[in-house]
View 1 (spheres, one colour):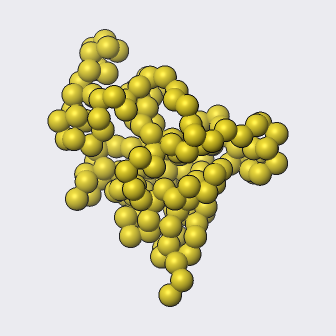
View 2: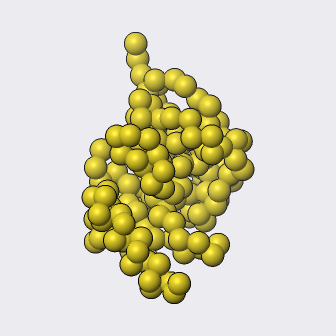
Length: 162
């Protein structure tokens, strides 16, 4: 099956589920609201955080600090601190990466078709700063059937006060 055909099938499937509007699926990058210089990013991020968020890297499965994390609170972008996911949407996908079935609010992440490594996936980036977060798959639990598979290195955590 050709690449264009695969892309059309993916777009058609996602649109039929109503989860990802056609206009938000792109093969190009988009313009984030906030931009940081390389110097600012290298100052603020660890080497692994920089590699994951800026070079679309992936941490090793089961190695991330939030993989088995169970505290109540909010997961934010490690780069710009934008609120991305709430702990009550986190679930154990047994994938080795923190997984969420829903974003904190609509428009917090941008979805981009990713054709790397001989497969087609949907990459997830922070809408505010463009940091690579991970990928989203349609094999998650109800109520969304979505699995946002996110690198711990792209996240910070704000613990909920009790």
